Image 1 (cartoon, rainbow, N blue to C red):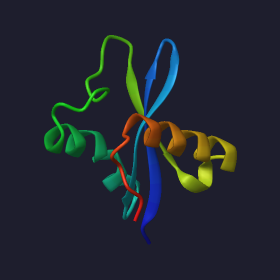
Image 2 (cartoon, one colour):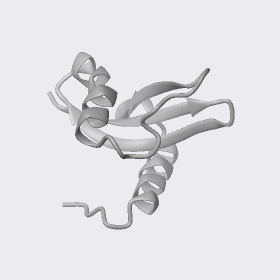
Image 3 (cartoon, helix red, strand yellow):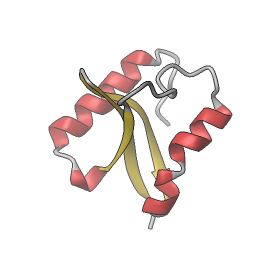
Length: 84
């Protein structure tokens, strides 16, 4: 069953939501940062600095408030993004 995830970049200053995506399983979800870097090499946030890492959270593991905040932050960072 396909699930929906948020990809966060974790830094010393906190978590930054980068993308919302669907994946068939957690193993596939873990491939998202590599796939995104390959398909969108100029996308800000996909390069890690010292001490930074990616975190992947499945929708059911997030509170509704945290999920909506992440989705809203991603949407405001990508004004041309359309839901559909």
